Each structure stands twice: as structure tokens, then as C-alpha cells.
Image (cartoon, rainbow, N blue to C red; front, side, top):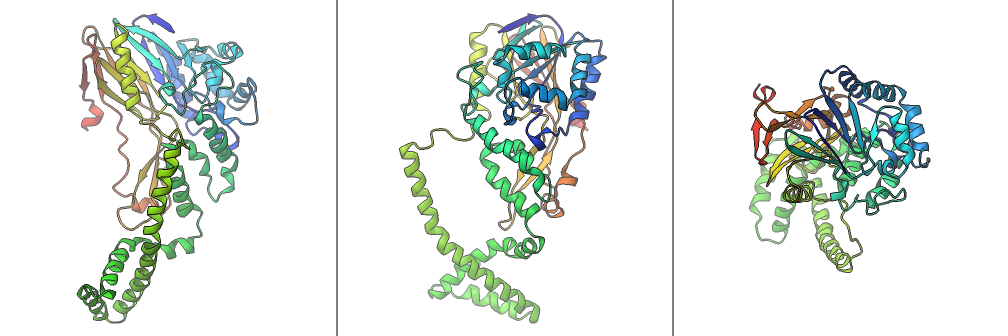
Length: 449
């Protein structure tokens, strides 16, 4: 576990996931990343860039083995590696393995190959840096995730549950993505948590791949489904003679409107019949599904969930670090793709986010239309430096500008149903932490505008 003591400035990025089979080779942020590295090439700061895991998507190469994957990276992204080389002449670049590129910790040859580009590969779980008397703990974070924890660190054949998901699902998506009407399947690596993948697939099928005539013919039924269910229940009460007045009054109201009203009532009647049939079939199926699930859980067929709590394990781990390791007040990780800062007992946790596209689920407010997965880029760099206050350090999120992909990637229907419901992409305010582990939030100009 490496430790350095100095008063330099640290820039932290993570979860680039560069590389993979076929369509996964495309890097949407390549220009922005090279521009960022170019800025560091000319900085006069005493700085170090820490790439905090998952720089490369080595798990997503399924047809190559070992160092062949790195050779493919060199061949595919020559301009990026040349920029690493140039930037590394001016500042130190430290690279930690993540879960997707755990092989970096398994082969010594990676150390030599990356050194050619002035990248210092640390084949350990974490590194520490000391700044103004405080210790900063850096690691990718997957060791706190039971689905991706590597039990035998440095084993080239390590294969936690996440390994199989990425080799069987993510890589396959990269191979098939360009076969769709739109090249969207490769974005499966941006879907978090992974249990949302089935819903995401159905959403993209409905809004992107479904025949437009079929989709638009379904819209009225799906939009009015909730109303149809209510009317189906009232119709059931009417048939059983329990309460007939609501249905009679509703029918009279529509009939009084003439032909248009009669047409609408006829359409609603069809919807009511369909909704009633769904209820009749759905209710027993619900109880059957629940009973089957209880039985499966009782026998322990599935020992591990696909997802984990994105915060609690890291909070517990950080509090343990702050308690057991003197002067450690800052824990910086990635892995979950959620940029953020939070205070815990004894110090502060920083998540450096991801440079991948992010997908934000937006459920429909009416009917049963599939949810929309709103795409965005939230590219950022964490900057850790000495604060103006004595014996304190500051954490800033520096935004890397990139246009939103929503206009190009969402259909007009998806955009219509997400008007006013776009994700809030503001990055965290500046935080300052002192040697006692006390944190203070500093409101930025960006957030006050």
C-alpha cells in the first residue's frame, strides 16, 4: 500500500471503461479526455493524476487473452496513449486496478508497458497520499461490492459474479448493438443497477425498435390503462349489483356528447374489457409469482443479488478506516458511477463518478407506458488540494463540458414524457475538511446562479 507525503494537488478520475468488443470500442468522451490531459500537460502545479480504477474495459474483451488486450488498446487509441505519454512528462500519473481491469494487477508486463506512457501502475488495492497532515485513501471500491469483490487479488483468473455478467451480457451487447434500428444496445454498461436491464431493454424496444404503427396504436390504451382499471372495477360492481350508479352516469355523460362521445365510450369499453381480463389473470399470477419467489429464496437458489446498496458498505468501510488509521480523513473511490460527497463519522467520502454515459430512469406519471431512461454526461474531475484555511484540505468537482445526448438519442415521444423531468446534473459543492475530520460545505458560484 503506497503512501506519499507532500503538499501537491491531486486530480482524480475513474470508471472510463475504455475498450471492449466491437461497438464497445467507441469512446464518446475521447476528445474531452485528451483535452483534459492536455491541460495537465501544461499546468505549473505540483500535481498528480490518479486514475482510480476501471480505466480500461478488459473484461469486455472476450476474444483476446492477457497482454493481447493491452496491445489492442494501443492499436485502437494511439492518440490517447501518446497524450498520456506527454502529460506524464509534466506530472505523475498513477493508475489503480478496478474490477473491469483487474488483470492489470495480475501481469507484471502491464507495469512495463504502461511505464512507456509515463503511467505508474500500482498493482495493489489502494494507495495513500498525505496532504497538510491528513491521509487520503484511494481505491476503486469494488472490494466493498460482493458481486465484484476479488477474493484472490492478483489472480488473472479471478471471476466474481460481475465478471460473468460483463462477459456474457455487456460484451455480447457490444457485438450486437449495430444490428438494431439504432445503435443503442452498447449502452447496457451504463445501466445501473444491473437489475434494471430487463426494464431498460423493454423501454428501448418500445420507443426505438417497435413498429411505429403498433406503438402508436398502443398509446391510447396504455395512457388510459389506469382509468380503464378503475372503470373495470366499477363495472364489476355493476354486474354484481352492488353499485351501478357510477357506470350509468359515466355512460350517460358520454352518450350526451353525440357521436364523438359515443366513439370515446366505445373505445373505453374495449379498454375496460381488456383491463378486466388483465386483472382477472394478473391477480392469481401475482400470488403464484410471490409464492414461487418465497420457495426459491427458502432453498437459497440465488445466494447473491445482482445489486448492492450503493452507499452503506462504503460508509461502513470509511468509518472503519477513519477509526483504525490515524490521520486518515478522506476516502476516495469510484465503481458505483455516482459522483458525490458525504460526511461520515471521522471524515469524508468522495465518489469520483464515471465518464461513461449515465441513464436516469423516469417513470411515467400516467398510464403504464414504459419508463424513459434519460441519457446524460456528467464528466467530472475531483480536485483535492490545500484549502485556504490552515491545516485543512479542499475537495472540488471540476465539470468537463459535453453536450447532452438526449436530443439525438431520445425519440420525440420520450422527450415529450420527460419535459420538466430532466435529471439534475449539478455536481457537489466544494467541501473543506480539517485534521479532526470535520467537514464544511462551501457554496459555489455555479450553484448560486
